Length: 550
Image: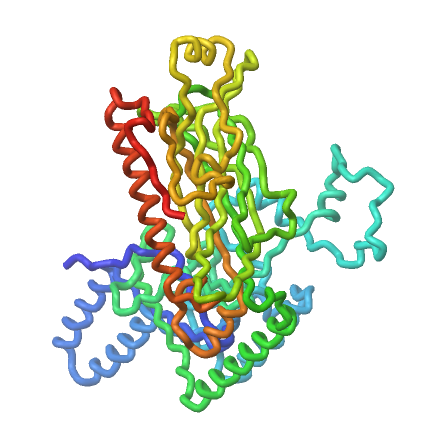
């Protein structure tokens, strides 16, 4: 009957807070070749034919053959189990030259004086052994790095001055390479080996076979190759040589479980350690955060002009300026405007897109005012006005579109796409001038894109003003809001309402802002609907009058 084998011999990575010295692995190897099965079959035949005296002799022979065909050992981390080859090598004191060799010599003599070693085929190579196991020929890099030593700490100068000699050595010698390079090898390795030689011929190097490799570092990572069987089929090992015998390999984690009182003590120790580390980090950060004054909101905007698409000409750049309404201020008003780099467009589908990825940031403050005479002051959010321009190689300058971006009232990350339009001069002459020599009608007041700053009436009319829908600009916004009201609400465990409600306690302001934002969204949808009708691309406010409530 064919045997089932576990073919997953890759690395298994474990994380443990326990010390690696407590690791215990049970290793079991068993010969499964046809010659062993034939010898067992012959044993049963002999036992059935001979008498009781012969039964005792064959039973003793069967036990010896079983020891030759299988072995089991429990191995700890960096536990040294000597092989037959090492027993014969280190028992001679004349060959012991290093302190490690002399230590092995004394340990082998102590084993001989006692009951002897319990292992025959399973042995280990620890991290201290002068042994390098590889299943393939070492690479050129491995051979070169094997001779590289650690950099000495005393080589560093105390004043950290630049050496007067050449910093770069273009023709390094071999001695220079050995003395100047560094290898950071913090992993400790241990090999569990198996002597798969035939009975009576143990101790030959060509019969040694790698069973398990264990690596660990100081951070609690343990790498085992292959992994524990965990109830799965055993691994298949084929010995070298003419016979090529097949062995079963079974691995089991037999580390002692931690006692409940020790586990509880360790958990309390870790909790105390984490609490002390948290207090240490808090001491480094401190508690004296810079807070705005009472009734003041700090608004931090980290934004990005991502892209622009749908415009008529190439080589686009964007001018932008931040308009602060009443009760808003900035500590650096000179940085409230900017201009992006010139970017060529790229065809994506049916659109020509210019990717700017231009970052900008603002820090502004809002100072709330108290209600007076029963009137509620409706605060306005800052507005970022921008215009898209094109400039070709012949120096022809054109306005491609105007737009605006209303700062979000909710903190967090936002992605917003703003549609633009440009003024349109009726007639063929203006169109020819724009095409051949550049130049086009501009708006003197950027706030006319939304609500002019000089407007004081109740209704705004744009009757007779002609415009043409152009492309769109995409923004990425990251908004942060800071106020003492947020801290007070967190302490009192109150539910956070609108920002303006917390600053001044105006209960109806949030609803008014929502109505204004809904009206603006409806206006944008109206613009998008007009784009779907090419015959009505040229819009005149003689057919549509926009009215804004103050």
